[in-house]
Amino acid sequence: AQSVTQLDSQVPVFEEAPVELRCNYSSSVSVYLFWYVQYPNQGLQLLLKYLSGSTLVKGINGFEAEFNKSQTSFHLRKPSVHISDTAEYFCAVSASGGGADGLTFGKGTHLIIQP
Amino acid sequence: EPEVTQTPSHQVTQMGQEVILRCVPISNHLYFYWYRQILGQKVEFLVSFYNNEISEKSEIFDDQFSVERPDGSNFTLKIRSTKLEDSAMYFCASSNSPNSYSPLHFGNGTRLTVT
Figure 1 (cartoon, rainbow over the protein chains, first blue to last red):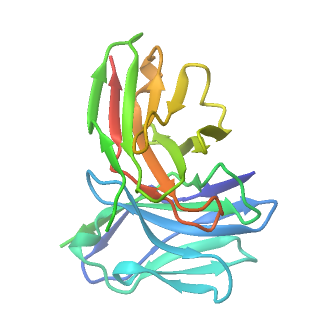
Figure 2: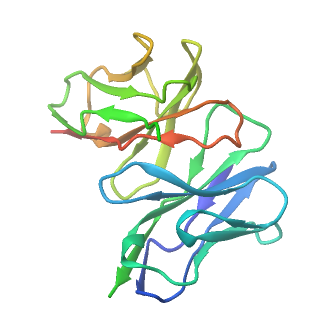
Figure 3: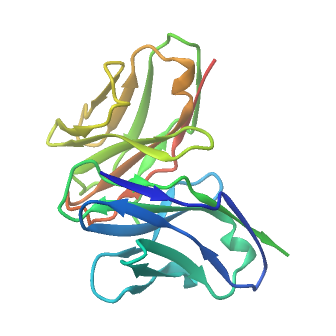
């Protein structure tokens, strides 16, 4: 079984400042890693994913994340945030060996952009 | 871009009543999922469905819950006798592959309020 920890429930950041949203996971098997974003009153949208290869993955809207196997982390970063980035961000994992139960999500981090 | 649609966006029901939450997955997708998110908590897996059968279900998905694909386009979640603790946001998702690296496409969710 897998689990995901997002330590920060809320992260306030000033506009144009950099941001890092933390995600740690635990798993007894190899995993795939995902970040989803949920804008107000909308569904979950895939930001980026790590499957294999380069540990730095780039996603939509200028976000990137780095997979660190030794630290079991997959932190999400953006060098300069915009008001429109205000949303809930969810880290998720799935077992790379497959499995019909889809994704295990973290609790989410609410990114609040202050003007 | 094709999307998953869910109706209604908000459902209010009295305890003990039956509710049906509806989803129209992306048309060429074959794998369907329901997740729920109780306010302030994690997005939790409920059930996955393929080829008119449940593939996997979580502990949450007890006998009160059922899923159905009544026709070629709809995918429904029924809660037979709702409880207060069923109040949550319910997300439908679909994918074109059961592989755990295939991203899930989520709908906007149905907010269920049980009074």
